[in-house]
Image (cartoon, rainbow over all chains, first blue to last red; front, side, top):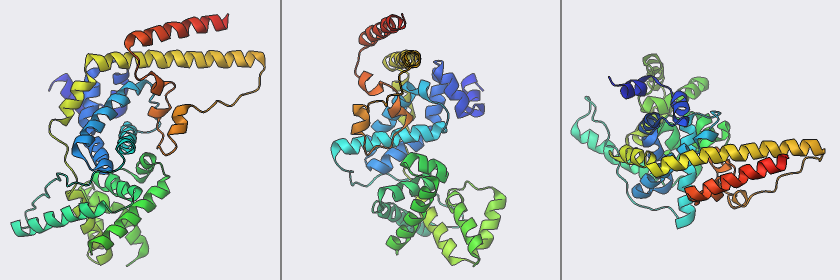
Amino acid sequence: MSDDEWSEVILSDEELVERGKTGDDSALGILVNRHHGAVYRVALSILSDESAAQDVAQDAFIKGFQAMVGFRGEASFRTWILTIAANEARGVIRRIGRRKETAIDLAAPVQSEDKGPDETAVIASEAARARRMMEQLPEKQRLSVVFRIDEGLSFKEVGEIIGSSEGAARVNYFHGIRRLRELME
Amino acid sequence: MNRTTCEWTRELIPDHAAGRLADDEIALADLHFENCDECRDELDLAYLVFSSRAVEPEDLADKIKAVVHSPTVNNRRRWWGLTAAAVASLAIGFNVILDRSGLPDVPLVESGFELESENLWLTDDGLIAGAPMLEGLSDEALAQLLDELMVGTSGGAA
């Protein structure tokens, strides 16, 4: 195992940030590896545009690393970079005026051993419908559901990113889930 | 079904759907799902949401790393660090001068950036002193600005 591979496994985000501040590019690369998927999905959930989401992901890391000297570690690096991505994405919407309403590439549902191809196809269809229905949720409810389920963020982290308290993030999540259930019926 | 048990289980549902729970938590939650259709339905929905999450393009990480590691960005990163340090030094120096003159605290005038960002979710990123205004400056311009700041600091202290 190379030094970089070893660092990728054992170093925490906080340690990588400290190394990044001293100009360690490999540390920054590991942070990109760890968080680019979540950053992309956050941008995509706000923009609904794959190309724009990639640009925002790129800009978020550039801005985050440029501002790293000011990172005080009060929030986790993940929350911090996701917040930058969310702000960048909202900035794009302000500039272009509205979200793009197009279908996006989704992960194929995993075919479990106890489900046949037909059932897997039904689940895939329902999953795609659920994602389309989510577009109808108010933004904070939609983002709370996305951050909590897709990324496994705590309600405290969700609140930090959407600019709400932990309690408000929890309420947004459960309202979003309840509304989504109604839309799916 | 017991309300407390439902509440406890519903907290776990997102992580259960995404396969992020420990085995003992899964066992406890599954026991509850056997007797609670409401929570079971919510788990099914969470599973649909998770299984339809977007996947990032395979080459995205490499694209980001290529830009982040480019000489231009690295150079800017160094200057941002130096500039932030210079601004911080100025702020400290200014504070010392104010303390010596015995003047009362004067509220800072809001910057244009803050005024424009009324609907923004503010972050540390947006609050770094001078960052928005310095973004378009070349390295030479930043160097000149830094020199002027340092001259201004030594002049002010004297």
